Length: 233
Image 1 (cartoon, rainbow, N blue to C red):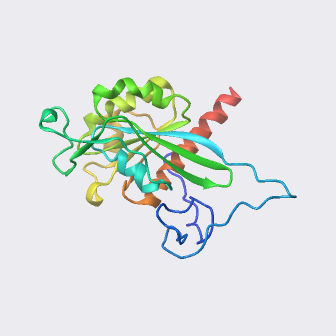
Image 2: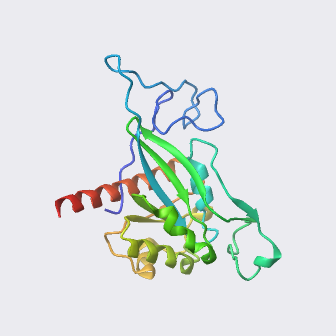
Image 3: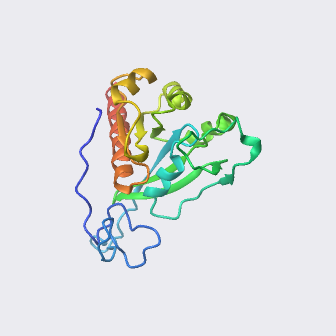
């Protein structure tokens, strides 16, 4: 499945997708004012907490992983950014279009409440090959992955695609639309990455909360399809 229909935008005051961080007034995603409703006990019993789901956000160096986690997280995201130095010249290349001056040296972490029953915990991997030894620990227990791609630097995302194919973890390839456009159309990207039609491929904007949400919903849909298939096998 290559696409999924997004649900309607949450109303102000709903608990869908949580309350944006740094927003004590409880403004909704679209900026409307309102308060976040609390879960209402049923028959005097406390509502069950949402089920935690671990999702990996992976990809090459400078493709927008930290931005992706930060755009959707309902808490201030945990980041492990360090200033890039002259020692990284020729080693860490963020691309000619990037003004990136920092790099993730461990991981990014954020979370977002989907609804009363589901909460996503997002773990962003470091993009440099020298931090690849951390991926196994970060991916342990994950139900799916979002592989973020810069279409002008496709070579950088091959390791992430190969990793999740070998790990047999459901993943979605999301092309980050830098400056609102991509360097190649999606079919060219699919051919270049040699990914099958069963792998969802889409474009998104890592800076936009709703665009990131839609991409993560595709990951959830892919993980659900895998779980149903495994159960029927």
